[in-house]
Length: 230
Image (cartoon, rainbow, N blue to C red):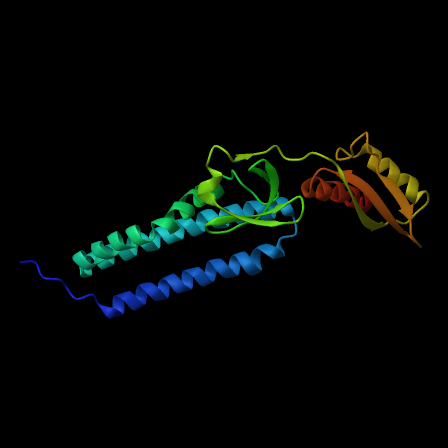
């Protein structure tokens, strides 16, 4: 008869330490590295890249751990996997679809979902659920397996323009007129919503413009600052 092999304690500790180090590395990059990127577009790209890299690293760890544990104690390893699958089904049914939604970029913070006839804005995408806020400011935590239900669908993103302001410094004659000309020529200025320039003091000016989202705001501000530096 095949006898159960003893599971080496040292192997378990080594795999646990590797998992802890991997988790600490990914957590540090997400928590402290991503906020250093000022551009919203670049931050979104890096966040998506970090998610894919994290999934790849965890898959490598899982394959390595499964191989080593299977060699050390096949019966024990297969029993743990079966038990974890059965007992953890309620966890997997939300984690797996959420992972696919995030990897494919179908849902992002700032998108809108309609749930039970009410619009909600996605604030955070967590491991097993999405944190949403309603028009009344209420909070809704929605499990990912519900987002795939037919009653819930992704709404079209809002395109209403919102005002935003930033300050610049420009020396020389006719500074305000030059700023107004640059704003009128900017590809990021909506013709129906012209930007305005207000003189503050000295060579400082406040520009008030309109944009549908933070990405266009960054492009508008970057365009004007580029014109000033020329």
